[in-house]
Amino acid sequence: MEFIFYVQEVEQEEKIYNQWLHTQMTQSLKEFKDQQKYRPLRKNKAKSTTKEEQQKALDFASQFVKPRKEGEVS
Image 1 (cartoon, rainbow, N blue to C red):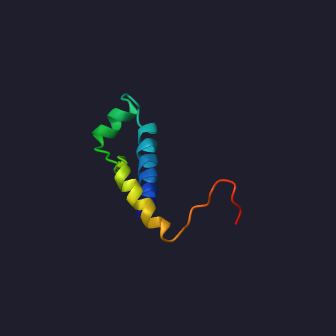
Image 2 (image 1 turned 60 degrees about the vertical axis):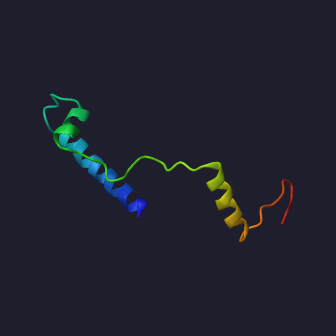
């Protein structure tokens, strides 16, 4: 789903940019986006995880995949 939003956002950004290029460009691209009420589809904030959550995820994944030691060949 994230990829679909990404592709749509790129297309939307390109359309806004092309519209701005074909105007008299009396304002900056940022001002033009604000005037057009442009809003990205995705939220750019990455979810932060705690050390505890990371360890819990690693423990869960270790049930299925055993990490190799350094220099170990399978």
